[in-house]
Image 1 (cartoon, rainbow, N blue to C red):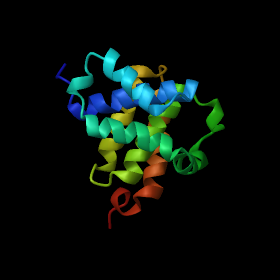
Image 2 (cartoon, rainbow, N blue to C red):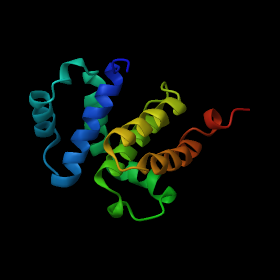
Image 3 (cartoon, one colour):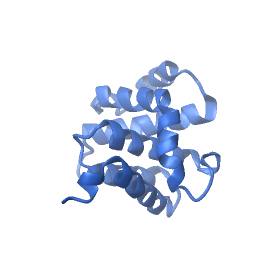
Length: 144
């Protein structure tokens, strides 16, 4: 297996931090400090991207929820914390990082779900983010 990219590591760390935040609502700075001191791969991550994903997703949670919610088959509160955190990261990247191709964003979220989520959770993540991408990036998803 090839080594993980710095961006992939940043997404994994952000997902872990969002998971913790969703369960505890602890201060994002404290979560970041905890991850930096306990995660052996922390220094190999794209730290700027990690911080933006973690803090940006928390700061913009209402906007992200509004983008996600119409595409769910259940209430947001019924999502597993892994699904919830992964959808937040994917939606944040789809809406705030237009320089990252939407297929890359979705693929990275699917990989997070495969690594940390339930058996078929990645399929759900793929379907929801595909719909979010159609709304967030209509010209990229459906080129002319």
